[in-house]
Amino acid sequence: MSRFNDNQDGTITDTETSLTWQKKDSRQLTGRWMHLEKSQKLAKEQSDAKTGGFNDWRVPKLEDIKTIYDKSFSNRDFGNNEIHIHENFEKGGADCCWTDTINGERAMMFSLVKGRSSWINKLGDGPFAVRLVRGVRQEKSNP
Image (cartoon, rainbow, N blue to C red; front, top):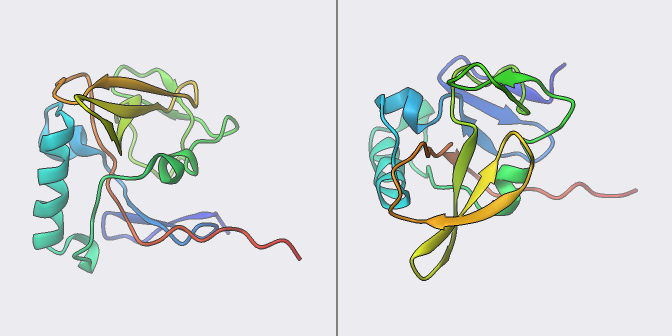
């Protein structure tokens, strides 16, 4: 059984963290790149629409987005370059994603190619996207 379960409703549940992710990122959903404020608006719209039956979609925390990155995973971004997220996520997404970490006019992005974060102008349109998430991340317990 895969750690990332395709729920067949546009969402994927991570059985290790208990987070639920949207299968598509914002560019795949809307056909355009977007800055952080538009990403936050999209989260509200997806919540209002009860996508996947949920009304609590949000921009991920940096620690959340790090959990879907794994160098052993191979998927393809919009330019057919390799990104390191599970194959159950829709192919053709962005190679980096917004997080909710903000410092003045900048916000933290996370690279799905390199597994690193960097600061970007939060009103930059691209090629930037968000992969919406819901739930509270569960830490793995050590026996």
